[in-house]
Length: 444
Image 1 (cartoon, rainbow, N blue to C red):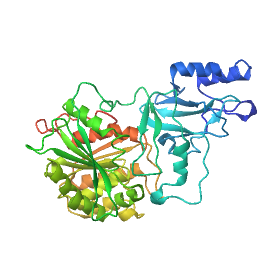
Image 2 (image 1 turned 180 degrees about the vertical axis):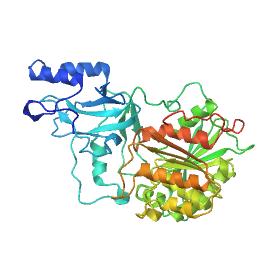
Image 3 (image 1 turned 60 degrees about the vertical axis):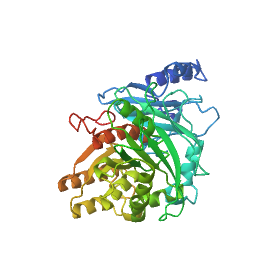
């Protein structure tokens, strides 16, 4: 629903002052194509960010889109609207080529968005692992904001013949916390990314794996810290982990570490990540021995991090619970802890296991967004509440837990900031310890 009232003809009244001016010109016949508005947009950029009368906490954000081709409907797809195209549906300014959506937004929010030219009807069937063909059609037809230079790019996954490159735009407000390690820098040492294929005995097909070797890596001498991340392609592109590690190491915020990026075949992702004991055993019995045979990495569990986002965060917690002898640190970003063993609808299952068992030698970094309130299963808690419950259980059991709630949703543009926060707290520099740690990016 558009923020604002209605005007003659039933069209939504834009509450944005700049759009209101364009609407008046349009109504008076001064600028039937709204060219003056688009000239202003070309200079100032989008989304429009303006004060919200009567609110000291929120700003008025207006998304504006000129599709280029005639469309009958349009929506903004974003975690800001819970990825719900009906909630993000745009209005048209008269008969002009201006489609818009105005919404009050917290001053510290960061979110990605893309424009969808129509609400795509849901097909009768869906692909496995819950990724419906409707979602694929949305990504195929979506367009980023040409008037916004801030973007996040996801290249085609080489192992997925149905995937494709896509770019999404980023909304960042004046008070959005900085993400100081995301952009590549010139003049600093860079690590190396090695590509491998691993054929696990316990899993049905080969897996792509990338390994980051930090600047100054040596096959001899003191072993390097180890970070294992799920959804490997996402943590190389959407979350530019190699760049983040380069920058953190250059700034002295992190000891040099080797990072392993595990890629899931598309039809196996949820099968592997939803508390799967076979997958957890594979990591311990096959991946870690392979990594240690190839690279100079530590066997000390409190210098080994397993991590991921969404189902990857759930898997990180589960793998460490099942194999604390292999993984000592858990880095969970928006972990989907409302899912149970082997993907079953048993919310809080992992929290129940921690509550019922003896305390394990584990340490946790958990984060979740203030917009992550919707549940995967009807009537069950969403990600935000599930993370709070796991936090409370772990603290009652005496686990060290670092818990952050950021202003945002289920979003790679958030996780690329909280990744560095999590690594910094879980892998404190050996000579500095923990004293003085403060989250530097997306934390409240």
